[in-house]
Length: 319
Ligand SMILES: Nc1ncnc2c1ncn2[C@@H]1O[C@H](COP(=O)(O)OP(=O)(O)OP(=O)(O)O)[C@@H](O)[C@H]1O
Ligand SMILES: CC(C)(CO)[C@@H](O)C(=O)NCCC(=O)O
Image (cartoon, rainbow, N blue to C red; front, side, top):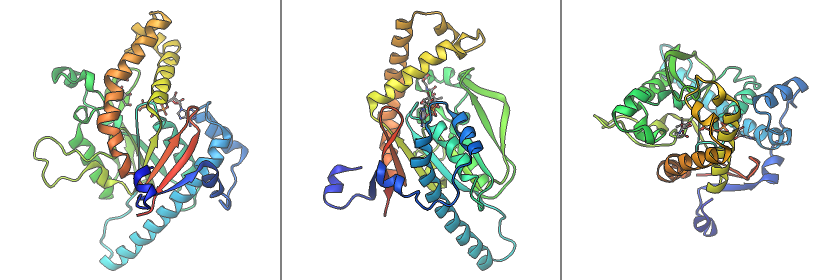
């Protein structure tokens, strides 16, 4: 995806058009059953069957090849090192990209598709939103307009979580974020109990920032991932998706008086549109430019989306 490097044959990525990528599913052994199709489309009513079959099936096939190779290496290492070595270690996939690019939808589709492979029946999914600092802390530190920026996360807690997973500990608990409350939920946790694959999605999974204090010798978040996916789309398209989702939420979730953004249910459509655009420009777009986009080149695979969320090109790391 780096044109200059591409033209002199030095890009670390191999590029596929949509059609070239779709052809890779050719000998995927199991077709989807009608029940599976219904369940996958239930994950997001805008997701088309063509998208599942042409993009996400080849991707799940590729990932299952990587996972099988890692599992084989792990078993060989256990034999080499002796019987008292750590038990099961999940394969960790990171899914990164801008706010509103579709990280959670892609992750849920991959979770469902990867669970169909015999060597990975148990696939867990966690979002790094749960590791955001609570609003009370963000307010105290003057960071409410920086939600999603590196400094708005409890980075040591995220690193501890990933370390525990990699060490084979179980179960490991992760905090949960509520978009309805616009805050982390103080008393709720999701438990990750020795899955074959753990998918971690978030803005920050490819980042290399260290915790502010005593950061030396501590790994980067991105170090923990066996395979890193970046979902990409043009700036103007992302803004549109953000605004469309905001307007839809205004008709649905924001109507509930308990919702953090309830006040936006009462304003006019044009005021709501203005509000969404100003949040996008003041917070999420700045975060994209400064902190998210610069991590794209670190991915193993880039999914490039067009205006209707259809993947129009794929780049796979070859080095
Ligand atoms: N493959 C897809 N096909 C059609 N629509 C999609 C697809 N993926 C996501 N969307 C839509 O795009 C919007 C953003 O998707 P999603 O919530 O998955 O993004 P996200 O990257 O997880 O966002 P955030 O970072 O804000 O949590 C939603 O309105 C969703 O319905
Ligand atoms: C929670 C995050 C950071 C990521 O999902 C995002 O959805 C968010 O809330 N960003 C802050 C600005 C906004 O309200 O869109």
